[in-house]
Image 1 (cartoon, one colour):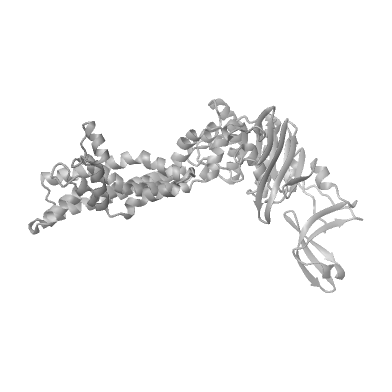
Image 2 (image 1 turned 90 degrees about the horizontal axis):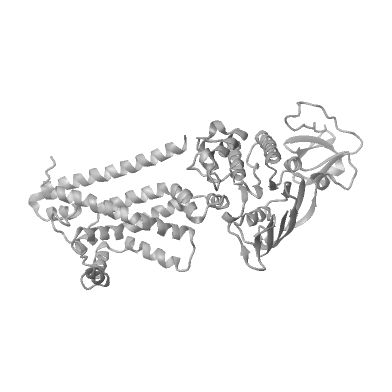
Length: 302
Length: 229
């Protein structure tokens, strides 16, 4: 069991705020911290890793106290068994892929490194330097390195945010595969709803330094007030008048949708407004494009 | 053509010996000082910075004079060394100390620039992967500072080759013993009949300097090639 109760004063873009978190994690599960940037998600990960010291609180991981302000306990980063995967990978540029992986092991076991290279499909790249790898390959190395540390908790700080859609999907599958194999308790930071939905067992939504909701991704993201059959929240990109109707272009994930607005709505809305797009009476058409190796795509409504 | 007397050859060899010794001796201390300045914020850091950079702004003659006061028979370091039977002033070792003092800020500056460009996240990654600060220093910081160390060493070596003001005061200008290339050129330049001799040593100086710069470039390129494999 992992119990985190921490408080720390932070200075955000909109002035100082207090990060106040009380969180429990089931072992071997993936918990995602979801929220806008600058709400303290990354800081929380860094507190767990021992890179940032909380003002007060307590961090307990599998019965071991890592931090306790009441009696001055604060383990240094190297004494905490964490596998941290940074947003921009943080691979050592002077070491080969294999040396990067070996670095994570306390007792050097080259055989285990080879196994991990094989598992993550990095065997052919073992003697390359990180500077010559693609973003996806680098992130794979970073993940393999974090797992080889044999951590009590795996910390993923927006690990896929710098990658393109396709690589991101592949790496999400890989994270799941590795998770099933090693069963590591994983704390993920992400602001990509699809990613959170696909990867996590539970979600904690952080807003202004506090957890406002927790639950399964389904509960947190799909529980809306109205009983819409189909809906999503997005931003209006443009509005134009065609003959006597108004057409608005709205982003939906990576796609664009064009919807008709009546005159009254058009007068009320402007590009940049956040809107709920919903269809009550009609069910959207769902057509299969590809078998399930990749996540199914829903056809956006016309 | 080049006309070099046996004394000239001795001066060339001595110059190389002094510059190399000064650079190698300063490297560990320079690395430690740069590391302290970049990674360990402490009280009095400003004072250390001023102290380290002082030789860069002081006239070398002034440094030489201070060293003479310090290391001479009546200086406090001199007295201490005398008790151990060591006598530094007017030996080649004094020339090494003069060169090391004058070149040290250049060395520290270069290593520091190299260290400052290291992504802090790499150090944090290293710590979170279980490495102590010493491990991190040796396996992450040191290899990533190699470029800075290389640049600093070349600069310091070149600066030591050209050291004049501090050396002449603290080591003197004794042919065959403490006379380095710049001191020999100074001797030749003061007599009008030795223009060719002075010019020859000047050419040797240029050749050494160019070689140092070439070597520096080549080593830098080797590093680059290795990391883009």
